[in-house]
Image (cartoon, rainbow, N blue to C red):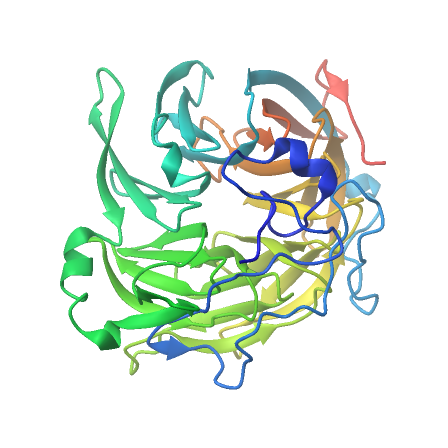
Length: 445
């Protein structure tokens, strides 16, 4: 059985000290971590794909500056600011909390900020950053929390043990969260376990139901009443939100572990993998299942993060090649074409968020870069947020005006790192012709 480091895309011996206590070991930094389980499902992404994960690609150590550059043929979208398009960038930051274990994921929903450290989830007030409560502290068997998603009043969490857990705020007055379901549900398993055709081989001498993930669930996304999950087992699964039943599973969606998923408002699904590819999935009106629409191949190493703008016309992807690629939807198609790259990070890109015209990228180089999109489609790096001692694993917008909104040129974000530090940043933008607020100014270097 192969073993993995805590951080799948780019393993490193230096990160071993931050690993979780669940029998996960670090591989050599020169190789990808690959799934030890066969993918399974009713449909296949590519009938000609090999069942063996790709092993001819490599990713550098998190602490090294020798990570691969993205393809040099991809033009840079960065430009130097000019007088008519320049901004004062003022920053204020303060530590919110410090944890003994690495922060794996952050999310915001309603009035709360959710912080995942190993298997435990802590809840903070998104405005005051005061600690509200915590849950899942006792269930260490679930493994680390890999992702969050929200469907109506439900909180969905994905875990190292290959399961998705559903929580409800049982008592709002006392801030008590209750586990109400685990996917796949008991009813879903019972209705399928009798028929042999519902079982698939996941490794030698072991079979699972096709509705089960065979490895860590690394990403979740929600659109309308559908829940999308991806895993290190290379599969993409779709769940119905109303009854939590698995209704579709894409076999071998990628040739290697899947690290990220994003879904547009129109239902187009994007998956990013350690096989260096981004795959685009859609469900045509005449089809009952999702089909592969396109494969985007421009990264030279594992794809770790994906983000979409509000209308789904722009896709951002971050990888171990240190670059953020920008993809734009073509008018004549339902998929994306690369239009340029954003370079500047010294190590792997681990997380991305897009808010208003700002893109924030968190990296294994321990920094967060803030990019602004201009009217001509180019990007300026406005500032670099520094202060973390280890890779930045997750970013989330906590602006009081709501997620994805920037109020009066001000956006508030939180960053979570493998150093266990949760930091809050207030980023203010003002035109050069406007008075400069009295605060610290930081520029990209």
